[in-house]
Image (cartoon, rainbow, N blue to C red; front, side, top):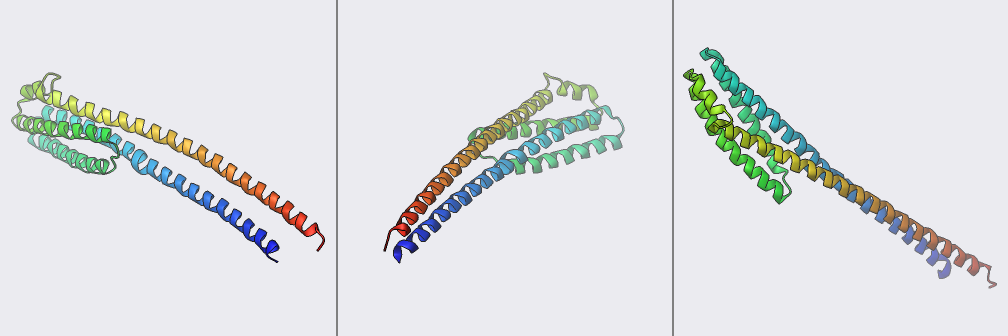
Length: 212
């Protein structure tokens, strides 16, 4: 009879709804975790590598100026070129993962500072090749053109680091809130399913107990 088949069908629907809600929430959490890794964790590592490459390049620049041997000057000049290539790659990868307008603005400031410092490096390399160390160090001083350009690039990198750390913290907090919401939703859905199943059980019991 229909009154025996319908409750079983209704119970299957309840189980299906609970399962569908669970699967949907699990997928949502998985997407959030993937977003945290791809757009926060990886870029934080990349901007750290950008900072390291930049500082190594500054050391190479100093060593190039100090050196008087053309071979050593060339070696350090080549290392600077390698650092520049490394920064090009890291910057492109970092840019591809930008998701906020604020970070886009900060990255554009960094790119502009990089271009300015590149021009100073060209001038410093020319001075180093001529062993004009005094002029080169004057250019690298805090008030020199290269020193000002280097400070601008360093500040731009620091700003990106701070923004990305703040973004990562905000995303982590949002994921925690989402996870708590998922837990609450699942508890409510499961409780509703349990109560409806109990009610269905009482209905079946009362129906079967009635005399035919």
